[in-house]
Amino acid sequence: MDKKLILMDHDGGIDDLLATMLLMTMTEVETIGIVVTPADCYPKAAVSVTRKLLDFMGKSNISVAESTVRGINPFPADFRRDSVIINNFPILNELEPIKTPLASKSGQTFIIERLNAASESVTLMVTGPLTTIAEALTLEPKIIHKIKEIVWMGGALTVPGNVEKVFALEHDGSAEWNVFWDAIAAKQIWDTQIPLTLCPLDLTNTVPVTPDFIRKLTKQRRYTLSDLAGMCYALAIPQNYYFWDILATAYLARPEIYRIEAKETDIISTGISQGRTILKSGGRKINVMTEVAIEKFYEYLLQQFAITPNS
Image 1 (cartoon, helix red, strand yellow):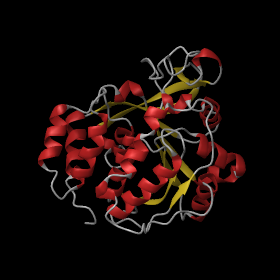
Image 2 (cartoon, one colour):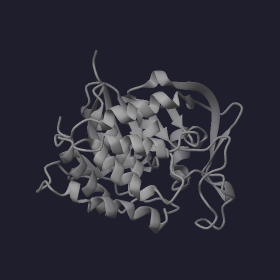
Image 3 (spheres, helix red, strand yellow):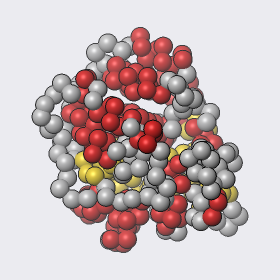
């Protein structure tokens, strides 16, 4: 069976990098490039750590590109600094110089080139805002025909958002951060006919990073990807942490453990609810991940993180 072509667009947070690591373990797909959108990160650090991660995984044949887009509502600095911390992990700095290529063009142009060069339609795995994809479509609308689907971690349909008022004083808290960063770009994508599969907070809120999972990860830490994963999760210990981006990404390899429902939806792009995703009769029909077999998901992650780097 031919492998599904994947182009990943992440925004450099802890979970984005872990989702990238998970993607690199998948034998079911072929990744044709990775773009870093400068949202939940400092972009130079996030691009650097992505390249180092690919070196660490023995995947230095995959190019990384830095997007030059900007959002409307910046992520807090405390969120973004994780990319700088991980970039300085000793485990990622043992191999020098970095071998993974850095694309000479912007992330949005890189997307256009990668899609045009692809032998078949491509699935876009997006774990950050949709801004880079929207900009690529603005620059070259014809690439829409090369996009098979967008799988996106974003939105909150029937649960509160995670944009706290301490970070957004003129917002009602109904939005999820990946939408809130640039709700206009999200609305632009919603107004296309590109097939969308959404992994919203409604689902991710039910799949926490548990002490039991961390304990099992620790037991298989030595000489495996679990070592790096454990370091990343250690940064998140002071907060309630969930499998956001990594839950969305696992869908690429294990769709059978998810329940998918068609929903009619829309994006609110202005006002105090900007970035809110809503259920709307007659709205844009998308596929939504509504349930996952949680234990099977945990087992899959542990299995993949038990892999030895470069194997």
